[in-house]
Length: 627
Image 1 (tube, rainbow, N blue to C red):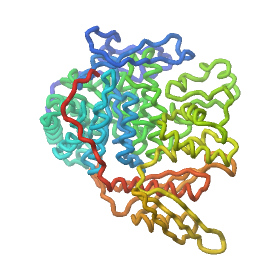
Image 2 (cartoon, helix red, strand yellow):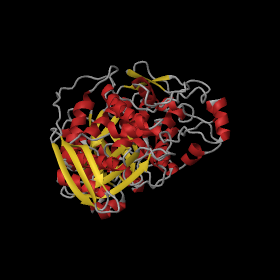
Image 3 (spheres, rainbow, N blue to C red):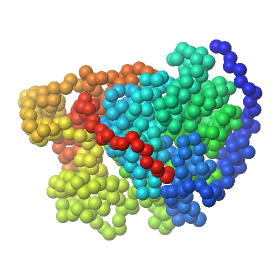
Image 4 (cartoon, rainbow, N blue to C red):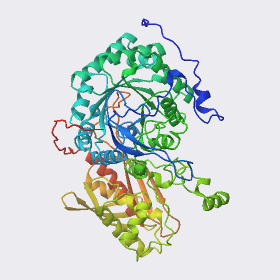
């Protein structure tokens, strides 16, 4: 390939990010001039809106942190140099996890929860992938992207596109009704990608990138993000050149992805520092990070990038995403909250961390991707103390073994009133316990849970937290009903073939009954459901767990299916069609009922993709917002 002539650059290789970021003897970072943090003091003339309290629990911090405010939103600059924008890509990159397909309703629910969290940018999807994806992004832009709170906050709604006019036009059509729309376009820049995937020269890639950024701006979008895919393995001089060209073309944010998760924290921090030092026009844009977790370093790399000058970080709830996932929102945010003032040069975010737990649970239930118990921040064991020494310390002073208070992320400590939930417990006691577990439920949802709770309590002496979590999963985090299980009867054993009779209710309330034989009770029940629904599917996964010990435990079932005759959307990175898979979950004290609920739930999710989601038309007139 022909080389590209560029002006001489200087190197900042003398900066040892590894030394000053991760030295065990370092208590306060000392940043070289090229990546020094500006003063945390802000000009009185800066417009400020939303107050953000960033502090550690009293037991963990010798002095409380000051109240901070969310700066006014400007696409290509941040008035407060210490503010870090949170770009959530759960609905785009996160959904690329195998089996994590989300319906339009589920995406909208998650987007609303992300707005409660206070994320700055929601990447709502890849509109050109399919008609379903386009409609889901447009629905989020119309609804969540127009809900301005009392303090002027409204999230940016972003759509992903490849560097071609069709994708960019689709992204703009999907997000343009939001108060703050953004187009995010990308093209690969590493040698291996340009040679084997794109089969294009450096000059061609630069021309495509700059012309497509220019095209996005010509549509009326004044907030355009550009990503050089596989930047972590791209030639530095070429990277500086193409980034400089897209800045000239009108890009407002430059996202630097470690697409294959190959860099270490010192390498990625150095990459951001070098880009900041050598890219012409870099002072006119925001630098962003997007770190994959293939080597388990995504959170560390993201923080290293922020320390080196990046002021937007791309993350997902629970760290879900392609292959090994992405940097975890809750981990990055809580590190900045706990250590930002004292160790990270005053960095802070606009996240309301008390909504983290509910966001985590919602994403876990909707995607079917369970959070490992020892996952930082949101894992079941994150605030559990079993060792006798640890328990003794916690009883004397919680700060001995907890650097984060569970209340900071929306969990409440178990009450000390000795309340045990059982068949005589009322709504108030149930609501209080669900709040302690991090669930924010409305009255209708609480009512549905309450009657399920009473039914379980009639057969169990004590209803545990695990039982409650299973019931919430089965009642609240379910797809919209196309079909609903009404009745089920099975006959099985060693004397003959298993038989199942199933009654389902359709969306219009009509009853449908079918009977089938099978090799066991679950097989015969699934075949009976198939006779009613008449949708050919392949069962890919089936798993069941008892949520508590004992013969009266609630069983939770998870299934993953794939439709045989479904439209194949386009993968954002590979440009290849792929088959969606759909997960479903069910819970009940009868394992066959639990299994059928899970299967019907997966079918409902699949069928919802065949229906056109209705979207409210929102006026395209922009109203001024302050932050």
